Length: 553
Image (cartoon, rainbow, N blue to C red; front, side, top):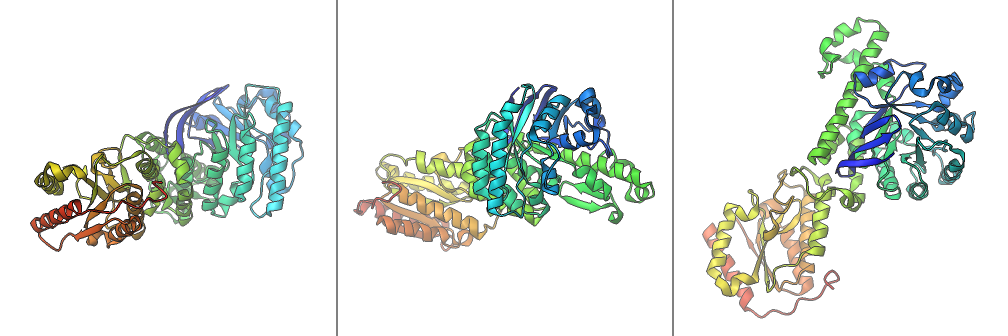
């Protein structure tokens, strides 16, 4: 049994997870099955909707049905021929304070019913507990996790080791390291339900990313109680491979109609904004005239169609390298989701480590949240650690980004090439041309066709945070490289002089000359003449040796 990654983007993966009942594809949603109250038959979930696996609660099965699932086997009992997963009943501990069975009994029961994926009986960390109480739940979960390997008798079941700690991220980090050191097949983020019920998706994002850093990268991560499809894309982008949700049924009971961006109440609807097989056959008015049970089944099946469609949308986004765009789009469905997306900037180096550096499509940059994108982080790291300007370069000629890309093929660059030809072989080789552009910062002209420097589109006008990021990158680049002087063509209309100020600051710290010429105040011919005069002055005037900085020291 193994987990094979086929495609990835950000921390999201399309993978193949082998179970004893067959191979399933991730990201994977397990609809929750309650054998006592089930609006959609389990086998219909697979045959009609395409769900490859379901999840049920081993504790509830044992309490209500005793040995019947053992005698029939879980698959036959549920009447489902796909992969099955069982939760251990730990959530009942959170709700009721305890369960009637020991971990030994629950493990034996899960093995007896023949589930494909099973969870140990951990101790969940509640939302309102103190750090001291949370530490106790973590310690007891670790004790049980270590004891578990002396209890299990079957090797054909994939066992889940939950990571506890709740909102206390240092405890989550410690728990992830301990659980990750044990030979579990899958890990799960424990205790997320109350976090989501309180709409603290920002805390949830931190919990997921903290857990991901501690567990082995090759193991799938399960998010219990994921709930609404509006948060699937962000959860996958953060590294969740598996989900379970009873929301499709619970929402249907209350007449709540899911969309990928939110939820509507059935009595308040005049139109169905969906073309799933159920919605094309009804209108809200005709549905309201039907019995309550029929309405519940209708909404439950619609909710399932929305969930499976969103998972397919996420998988295609991973294939296309556009998971960020999808997650960003979904984050605007609710302020709490946008708060979660903003937390990614605290972990952008971690995302950059595991996200592909080359993709099948360019990127769209809309707002400052995009500064946490791995492509931007990766470029910054590589420019400052792997790049050296051409030999014998003395002067950095900084130019503003052009509308056309690649920059060196833009019409504006034709005049710069003419200027370099005029300066001739004595001076032109000493001039290094680079562009400052959003959202990447400094782009040496010889690199501007490297992905994604020409394969992106940026929304204009630029916001303050993006301008400040480019300014900071400009300052850092100049301080790290060994130029003897800097000449800049300034575009105050787009950049509000921020780049000019940053470049001047860096040159002052390095004790090298800086000259800036404002574009738009003179004709293009006069601009080239001014550039020529300034460059010749810098190249023919003796300059002091640049002051070493911490970066290049």
